[in-house]
Length: 313
Image 1 (tube, rainbow, N blue to C red):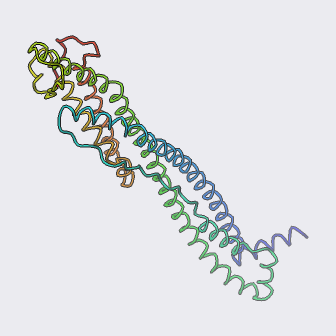
Image 2: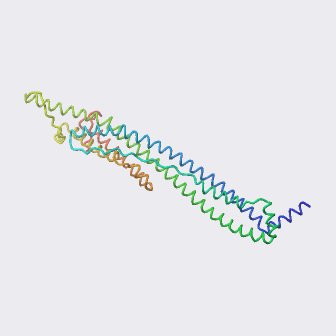
Image 3: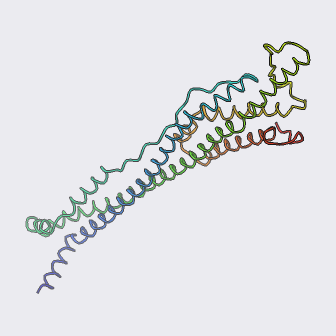
């Protein structure tokens, strides 16, 4: 008897569209659950990367403000002895990124829609009792038409949202790559100035003072208020040409480093649509710094190279 009743009930459900409604609602539930899980994972991963990025920027801002600014100012003071040079601008802090907010309202709206269409068995029976089988059939089939359309639209919406979320995730990954290269460039500027340029300039400055004293002694003048001629072009073409080339390349390194330091490169790049071109730009900064560092090495006395070293300038 139960089998017969179940068979009759199934036929009625098929006739009214209740069977299809249950399938559509079940499919919508599964789709919605998977979407919430996927988008939550993508956003959580992206926000973790953003937090890491922002931590890097905070540390980098502190390093630029409290360390690199002093190093560049020190180089400025030394180079000012040998020629005209523009001072660095006021410190321009790099900006962090805002985290992505989970679309809770969209989730809540879809959850409520599913709940409104996922009625219990007793509610279905009431529809049949009060509206007859034919009345229930008309209402449920209309509802199914809307459910089918909603399901199709929701699939498109999910695909679009997940695609946008992944693009944001990829963009953040690109931003992090750029930030790491930029951080490396800033640290290279600081290291080269502090470890390579300043010690050599101290040596050259001491050499020029010694030359001035030597000339005074040769001329048998008093060793008081001795003027020191720091015009570096006087060294060009002499036995001390390496000093000339080193100072010249120190000026060039200062100009490159100053440009990178003064301009909030990272903010300018990351507030636009990043691409491989942006990576290439910061990589070019790296190449320029490395090349200029090589030039400094070639002209350095402290590097231990002899007078026959390369004459790049």
